Image 1: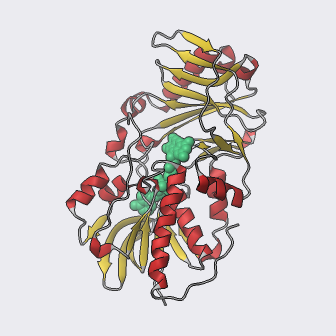
Image 2 (image 1 turned 135 degrees about the vertical axis):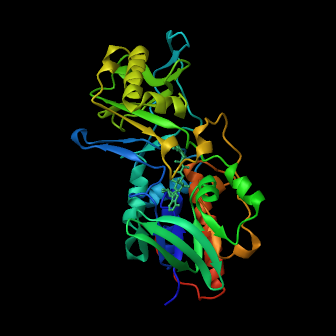
Image 3 (image 1 turned 120 degrees about the vertical axis):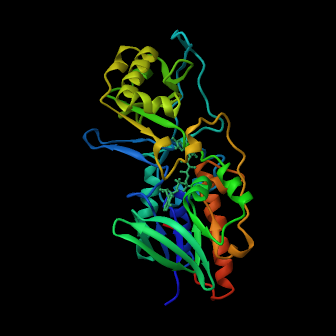
Length: 375
Ligand SMILES: Cc1cc2nc3c(=O)[nH]c(=O)nc-3n(C[C@H](O)[C@H](O)[C@H](O)COP(=O)(O)OP(=O)(O)OC[C@H]3O[C@@H](n4cnc5c(N)ncnc54)[C@H](O)[C@@H]3O)c2cc1C
């Protein structure tokens, strides 16, 4: 039997790489350490209120993200522009609150997916079918180059075993790869240092969401967009659904990971609701439900270095795979995209490039197979 193509990580990049291989008529094994697919994409479901709010990424930019736009369309997913109409709210360090009649605009406008960003990874996962063998709760520990492929050491609840792969696409963030995966023969120390120096985008962040019975801030002429120099939320936006019937606000927590861990989740929720009340009035004091997601302490997203806040969007680039490993191991994941590094679009771009490499490699040994439609 021929050896499988193995993809490590079932975030957007891994799910899309697997989808593209399926389209080209190739099976794959998709290995994921978490008990769920999606990686940094996660939408919290509150069944009682039939609501799903994003705890990871929210926005894509149709005018700027051609792959995201094409994929969302191919999967038949609906999207709508971020609500920005109304006054912008500003909070000074002393807690003074101003409502400015300027509309907060993203240019080009950002869009949200109906059902949250997880609708995208759910749809990709649902369409994998039996062409992809998805292994959840399975962690890659090491990779060894063998004459006939790559030997992977994997671990799940039942123990540790090895799997030989013909080619491997690794989509896990560069820092985690350098830190967690033993490589034989070892990769040059400069390459590993370069990977360790590459921040995992948004890995040090935390998000707070609060659902409300009504979008009362809209009724008060406010957009729900706020910038605060006091905190704990540094930036707040309207997170309601397309109709506004399921009302919600979300905020990026500006306080550092250490501070967040020090005060604990319950205190962070309490302080965040207090802040929303300062910003938008008494109606904000009684959310239907709230949720906090702190990515900085998620071992399959953040390395220790990611627990320091990032002050800028890093310039990402595709690191060189050492000569001996080329044609056996391909690197994907958003941090490998030079143009859209960090963004959802980058996760797709990097997956496309890796799959192209795998297919070119295969075409030198196999005859090409007919392409399957995506959806
Ligand atoms: C709070 C937040 C807000 C964001 N907002 C936006 C936004 O609005 N718009 C936007 O474009 N982008 C945004 N992003 C970035 C976006 O989430 C990422 O670009 C994208 O999800 C990355 O996908 P990926 O597949 O490359 O990586 P990941 O989603 O990190 O996937 C990597 C996968 O590898 C798995 N893994 C790790 N180690 C191992 C191992 N040893 N063995 C097996 N599996 C392993 C992980 O569990 C994970 O599933 C945001 C991110 C966060 C955290």
